[in-house]
Image (cartoon, rainbow, N blue to C red):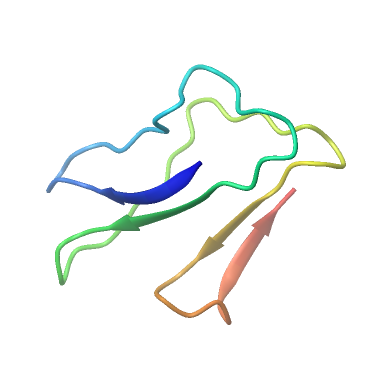
Length: 71
C-alpha cells in the first residue's frame, strides 16, 4: 500500500483502492508529484477514519518538518 502518484496538469488523483477499504494495521504512504512550478490542491470528497486508529499526515515538500496532522 502506497507509492508515487503523478498528477497530470489540471488532472485528478484518486486513491488506487477507492472506493474499497484498506486492510487493518496497514500503513499507506503516498507521494503526489507534479511538474515543477505547479501546486497540489487537496480536496476530499469522501474520507473516513476509524477513530483512535487512523490518521492523515500531509507534508509540504520533501521535508517532514512542515506538515498538517488530521485525526
